[in-house]
Image (cartoon, rainbow, N blue to C red; front, side):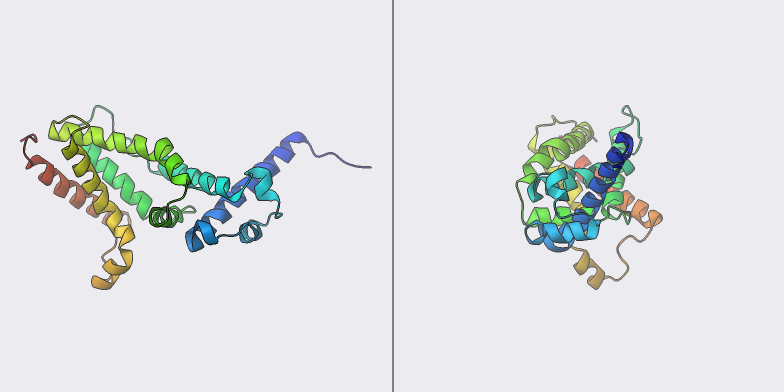
Length: 221
């Protein structure tokens, strides 16, 4: 007699397989990049049938986009951009929260810590997924930072100086990820190792950025 699996169990099993595929794919994409990653290796690590990716995602390209969405979403869920700081808080406090959140995501050692490596590869060799990720996730965060900086500098959000200063803030944070091999060789143990050292770096970047912004022409004094 053939036994039918209850619908809720079948759905749970499918959802579990999908998550296994996302985690396995994230690790593989981080190690070898999108172009060199193979469906066979991803399925092997996920313990899934070779046809599973086609069933759940359609193709490798869609899987890759979903991996970016999944990891970015998990990172923001764990470390939201303003870290719980109220919307009516002073812009300087919001800037510090934004910087701290970004650094926490960069140095996270959790299950999706491969997100930073995948994004680094994406910056070096952009795929079609980049456009979707920018519009869905990155542009809203950029607008949030532009709003904070515009308040600090007392300038419109679309002012070039606001954008340049915003990019400079982010650049200071991602430097420690993109140039990690150089930093560790120049000054061993310079990279943050724990929550306290991440807090210390967040304070430095925030103070440095505020000092620069407030001494540019037309900035608040």
